[in-house]
Amino acid sequence: MTTGHHLDNRTFHVITFGCQMNKHDSERIVGMLESYGARQVQSVEESEIVIFMTCCVRAAAETRLKGHVASLKNIPLPEGSTLDQRIIAIGGCIGQNEAGALIDELPHVSAVFGTFNLSSVPELLAQALETHSPAVEVLEAADEFPTCLPSHREVPWSAWLPISIGCNNFCTYCIVPYVRGREKSRTLEDITAEAQTLVDQGVKEITLLGQNVNSYGRDLYGEPRFADLLKAVSDTGIERLRFATSHPKDLTDEVIAAFRDLPNVMPALHLPVQSGSNRILDKMNRRYTREHYLGIVNKLREACPNIALSTDIIVGFPGETEQDFQDTYDLIDEIGYHQVFTFIYSPREGTPAAELTQDTPREVIQERFDRLVNLVQAKAYDANQVDVGARIPVLIEGVSKRDSSILAGKSPKNQTVHAPIPEGTDLDELLGTIVEVEVDEAKTWYLKGHII
Ligand code: SF4
Image (cartoon, rainbow, N blue to C red):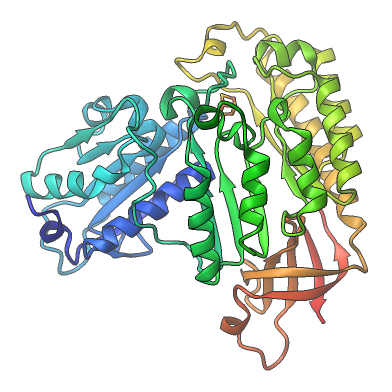
């Protein structure tokens, strides 16, 4: 089969759910399909091929995906298409987890692939186009780190750089180790070389990506080498360096020191705590305590006093008592995060936690959740106030969703910053540049200011 011939000039649209790892995988799919002559379009209506990159971390995502796929049936193909029907492909974690069962449930799906075989996507699509029958390929593990696939970056000034895939931690509620496999790191030289290429191409911000960046390298070098990697990538001269996600149990003093010693490591860290109760942390198999977590927050603030912290919280884990919830509430109150992603627990089939009995009524969980959200907002508002009057460098990413005369960008602390476009300035000239903004007002989720 000549893959290129089947894909040449076909229009495709990628819809991505879930984490940055999925977004990065989507960029690789776009890059690969473009290299076969296919054209990316921005809507389902314009597309002959629709690819869903899915996430199965939350049960609701699966229901949403299935509704979305079903709704495509009623959307006609774009004018001039030579196909009989739109090609629909599902990849990512749901593809990995459900494989061929998806075709049985959603008969108009034409291709399914998993998390380990992105490189097969063009071939699977070409096969579906040629044979008019579903093409399914899901592998159990990757032979090697998929670094040689082309990638199409969403924006030219910012790049995600995967450093490891998979996870060895087996938190009891999480499906990731089952769908992304064991942790596999890329070599330090390989990552640094790619970072250097990105810098040479004019990229301003790199985000190193892994399910748990802190254990980076343990599989390759016998011990984690994330601090060495940070130093090596920092030395490329990148302007802004970020990373996600950090497991608190593996955050070392050397990595904490990087916030103090490496000027391009941005003062923002996402450090998922999940719960403030030691009893629940134990049931989640998180392998740290509330006290350990507070200890690392103190060290981080000593090393980098203005660091902005964010976290994830699961409310209503099976067996969560009022006291357990109160411990979480108090922890959030004490730490004062810039942002907290709050989730109501939902069981994932195939994980140990899914076997636990949920004995807390739904209304009680909802009430706890609402209480927590109120606190999170009040704390985020407070955390932003310290920046009023400050002059901060902002990487301009676009315009505000509500008002196209207002620029939107990111501060070093990863806060969204709004500022009016200065008169006589062209938006395109500002995109991807770092400008100085004086902050006039701080809201819960963004700062307002003006360009100096
Ligand atoms: S660290 Fe825990 S929550 Fe994160 S991916 Fe691994 S198993 Fe899932």
